Image 1 (tube, helix red, strand yellow):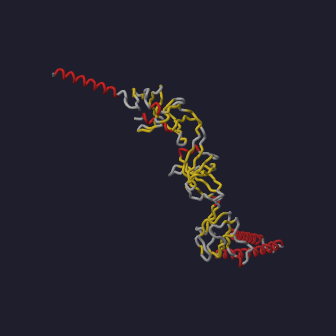
Image 2: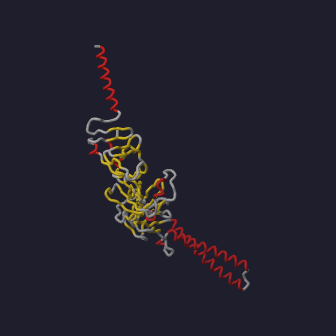
Image 3: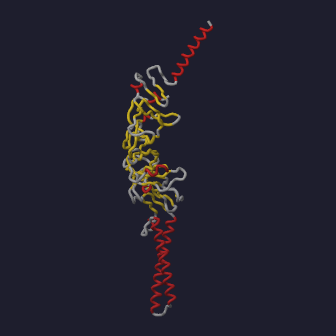
Length: 373
């Protein structure tokens, strides 16, 4: 009995070892979705339902026209955004505009009564009188000199005094012009009127009639013409060479999610921000509707130059701890897993492959996850 029992045990152990050895050859030998592993290859045997689920096709070369998307903000045109700063301190006598008003170039904005302007007119009157007196003295001395009554030294002295008086007179006139007043203004009209240097809208207003304005660095109001605004994007250092003047751009804003805003690159900055390692790129936009406001956030997409690239469906690329991989068909229904390097993503459907594949090679386009163990 012991001999027969021992032989029976040996037969059972042999059968178990044979079964275990068969497990190295096949991940699944039962079930509909079976595939076999033969070394580094995966084989989908005939009759497996995977043959109906896996979609296989070739890698193709296509013209790739990709886009580079970067964050941006809306900015007012610097040449159309002005802070109205009074050149001298004074009391606000009258405001000619209100917040939100659209004004034309040259239109009065605010009238100031300024002691400095009064002093400037006083200096002008004094300089004018001295200039006239110096002119009369010079004419008299020159006439005396012609009759040898005045010396040459006296003539030269009179000429010097006249030149000095003339220079002071011109300086006093220039001061009046600089303040924006008229040289012909009478005593009752000697108010400082600030006028609009450009057309635009009063976007900020800080002054009020009767208030005394003595901070010459603070604007009484801000005049902005937002009929043209700029998209200002920050492009990373590694992408600078991809950007050029005239390049087409499409901007998207959260305020208008379904509306694209088209523009072209007008200016690429020549200075790199040392902190962010980015360069400013600016693109104008016709904002006649004035819907776009300064400081709005946007994303701008630059249209890059097209190039020929190898593309596959994004669903063909699987991710694991080793990176991006695809299943390449090396023989009918026989696959090897291969690492690839991804390039540009063309929307959600297609991805450029830079390394790991050749044109025409067949691979699992979809449902490759069923082979991914």
